[in-house]
Amino acid sequence: MHHPILPFADISAQQLNAIKLIATDMDGTLTVNGKFPAVFGQALWDLQKSGFAVVIVTGRSAGWVSGLAHYLPIQGAIAENGGLFFHQPDTPGKVLSDIPGLKDHRAHLANTFRQLQTHFPHLRTTADNAFRITDWTFDNPDFDPVDLDQMANLCTTAGFDFTYSTVQCHIKPKGQNKQAGLLTVLEHHLPERYNLDQILTIGDSPNDQDLFDSQVFPHSVGVANLSHYLEQIDHHPQAMTQAAEGLGFIEITQRLLMS
View (tube, rainbow, N blue to C red):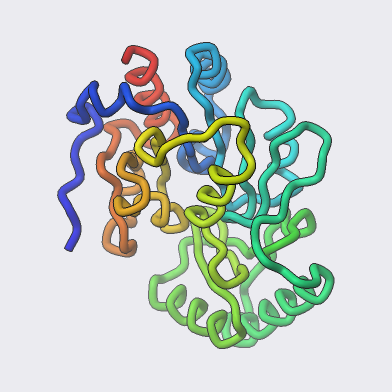
């Protein structure tokens, strides 16, 4: 049973006043048509200046995310749906998942992808897969939900979890997800401790649903484009923005900066 989703404008100022850390997805949540809008950089600087910590929690690869953590005024960034955390500039990411041998792990991932291709010959590995450490990704050209279910079942049989976003499908270690990764980072890898009711989680697609679990994160917001996926996800956010994609994120930050 899902709770009703409030318009973000109806979230009380009192709730927003408690927020100290923003944990946000990237693609489709911070971007507009795949790019950061001009106002995005200013929003991040304004948040930092006002004392908000920002952690990006994305399915994108270790290679891409290490760059983001280096260049953006953020507390850090979690890559590969909870696989690694990049915090200090120019240092390797911390692997958050329990993976015994990375070389064997990648071979197992590659083999599982080949098994998926026997059922779905048109699958294409993503361009950023070469820069990944914990997971394996292929493009999501808007697959049918029935096909996505079959892919998930095949991955489970091979001993992996499966998730997808608006852009990619991910074969990943069991139990590796954005919620588990964020909780590990909050507990071990930030200079300051935050209570869960001081955190606002933001996302737009099925691989963000663990961030919408109200039993863990009481404050969560979906940007308006999440509405396409509401029937396909187990957890719904507390509220939804009026604007879609990165402009939804700007809608959220404007209210936080006023509070």
